[in-house]
Image (cartoon, rainbow, N blue to C red; front, side, top):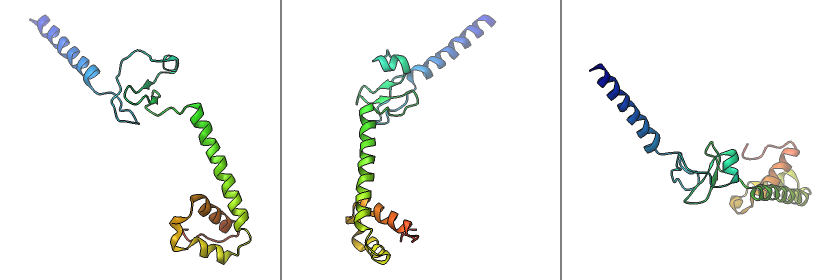
Length: 138
C-alpha cells in the first residue's frame, strides 16, 4: 500500500513538473510579443556559441536575457548618427555665437519652439550654459 502511495505521488509531482516545464509560456519577444519556445535546436552559429533566440515571427535576434541584439551595421549607423548630430550642433553653435544672451533666451523661449529641431535647441542650451545663464527649462 505504501509503495502505491509513494509511486502515485511521484508520478503526480513528475506530471506537475512536466506541465510547468512544457506548457508554461516562454519569454515574449521584445519586438513583436510572440512567446519564444523554451527548447528548440539552434538556428545559427551565434545561437550555438552564445545562446539566445531568433524569433520565428519577426526574425529579431534576442540574447539569453531577452534583450534585442544589435548587429554590427546598426551599431556603426548609430555611432555615425551621433557624430553627425554633434557636428550639426557645433555648426549651429558657431552660427548663434554672435547673438547676445538676451537674444538667445528670446529665441529659446519663443512660442514656436516645437518647430525647432532638437539639434538647434541643444545648441542654444549649450551656448546659454557656457555663458553661465540658466536655460528657461531649468
